[in-house]
Length: 336
Image 1 (cartoon, rainbow, N blue to C red):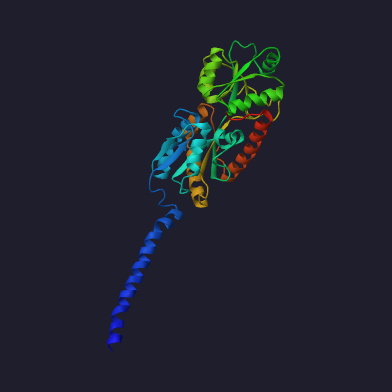
Image 2 (image 1 turned 90 degrees about the vertical axis):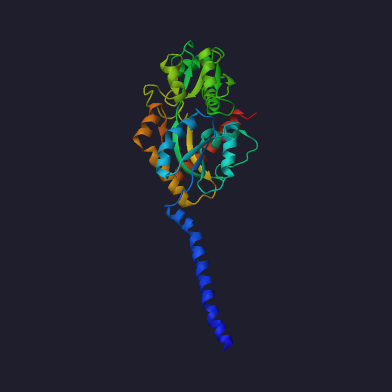
């Protein structure tokens, strides 16, 4: 009887423990369940890594978008500038971050697809160590010359390059402007001299000052000097004409079909980010791109908002990785 009485007293305790454990497990699961439902994430500020200094193309694009993004996420989106080594430092930091959505990178074509083509050793593989979310925007490049150069179109510039030595500036070894110059040399059968600078600003200054004669510049960096008459636009290097210079033909239109190079910016998460997280990030970023004030500010300086699907962005990365690797091999472009 004593044994039975003891058992009757202990059973409720065991039941209470079981209920307590179940409640604790359910409580612990709530953040996970809520995150999957998308109604409790994010619970703290988000970090957006930029592979460039403040004032650069990626930084400017991010700052145009972050106010709207913060509203949509319900948490601040904090910009973390990590310049250096063609953006590879920022890419490496992102690749080693947790795939929880709190760290992402607004990368650019230089760090995502060009750097792997010119560096012998890389700490990341773009399509292995990252999860593509969206191609956010593209910035067309415009081939500009010093106004003293006696050429007003691409045909005249090529003819001039065959009779005298011309220097072409770039934003640095391995930059899109470096590849653009090499591509034009090979397509047109000319040989210009490459002068690398530390960014688009110094490269533009070199052309304005006459140290270099031509430069394939991001259009948003060059428009002020073009309007001021300090630079003469020759042709767009991208496949399509720009809305801010609608009468300027492309290099492809001017006798070199398929010529296409500019700068693109895209959102990447670390590898193994969940499909639900990718869907949420895609919705907030592409939704921000559709805001009229964001579109107006981007289009005003020639930046083209895109907002692609994750799959289309992955395909773009794959195509560009192969394309720039081939160009780098053929032109023998290597990072020093």
